[in-house]
Each structure stands twice: as structure tokens, then as C-alpha cells.
Image (cartoon, rainbow, N blue to C red):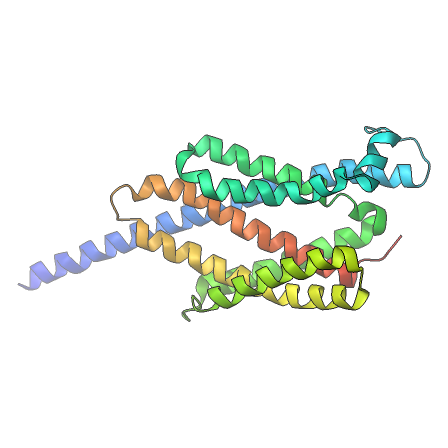
Length: 255
């Protein structure tokens, strides 16, 4: 009986080690996909944004013509650019179960490129140095919040409903403020949004971890987790981008 008990404990230890190794690999995949998407967003935003800044200062552009840049900033095309990432992410979330892993990654990276296009205007409004500094601050804050969400023993799943309701409120307030143009409302949206997406960073990280532990031993779970890593990367990517944009409102030095 003692030997049998020892075997059982040893077997449980092996399974736990396997799960821990698998979880680390899964989280590495999530953060890796997120990092690639962030690099795509940054590259697109920098290239397009630099051309916009050059055109704004009546200097020769590198890629886009003055006419294209003017249309992107002043014509109805700006609303298409603004809302295209939202349309893609909604469609992506609804169809991911029908996509292959490769196709899902492709759509995710397309979304990242569209997001870069939609935020490229920041290079007109803010200095390059303040954008870089804000990105660094965001990265440090994101890393700390995500690490806490991963390691904490506290169940924060109850935050989900509250945070999602907050995001919906932010979207509505932001859309309304496009036409109102209230600086006070923009300040409030930025402050509240920063808190909400800080909470979502920890919440989403714990959710990714919990979902892995729930699905790892389920039949067909590994196939599901391959796409789950992409969805997890998308969630954390959105948390990071939104934290960055809200922080830029406070830390960015205007040109």
C-alpha cells in the first residue's frame, strides 16, 4: 500500500510538472503573438505617422502623397480608418472557430496593421520622444499587472462583468465626444479608461491561465488552445494599446 501511494504521488507530480511546462509554453505563445502584433502596429503607425507629420509641416513625404494624407485626416475616409479595427475584431471573434490556426494568426496580424494605421495620427500631435517614453511606461506597467494576474492566488474572475460594462461605457462616451469635443469628458474618459484596462490586463492574464488549466486535459482541448493562444494575445494586445493611448493623453508632449 505504501508503494502504491508513493507511485500515485509520483504520478501526480509528473502530471503537475507536465501541466506547468505546458502552461509556460502556452503563455510564451500568447506573449510572443502579442509582441509580433505590437511590432506590426508600431511599424505601420511610425511609417504612416511620420509621413503625416512631414505633410503637416509642408515637407516632402516618403510614402504617401499629400492628397492621400489629406483624405485620411479630413474626409469621411478617416471614420473608415478609425472603425475598421473594431469591425475586424468583432468579425474575428465571431468566426475564429471556423478559421484554421494559420488563418486566425493572419487575421490577427491584419488587425494589428489596421490598428497601426488608425493611431498613426499620434505622430502629428505628440513628439517622438514622448511617444517612446509613454510606450516604455506602458510596457513596465503592463508587465507588472500581467505578472500579478498570473501569480496571484486571488480569484479575480468577478471583475469581468464590471470591467466589460466599463469598456462599453468608454466606447459610448468616446463616440459621443467625437462630435462634442469636450476636453473635460476626454480627461475623464482617459483617467477611467486607464484604470479599466489596467484591471483588464490582470483579469485577462488570469483568465488565459485558468482557461488553459480547464482545457488542457479535455478531449480536443489542445486544438482549441492553439486558437485560444491567439485570442489571449488579442485580449492582452488590446489592453496594452488602450493603456498606451490613455497614458499618452497624460504623458505625451504635444508638437
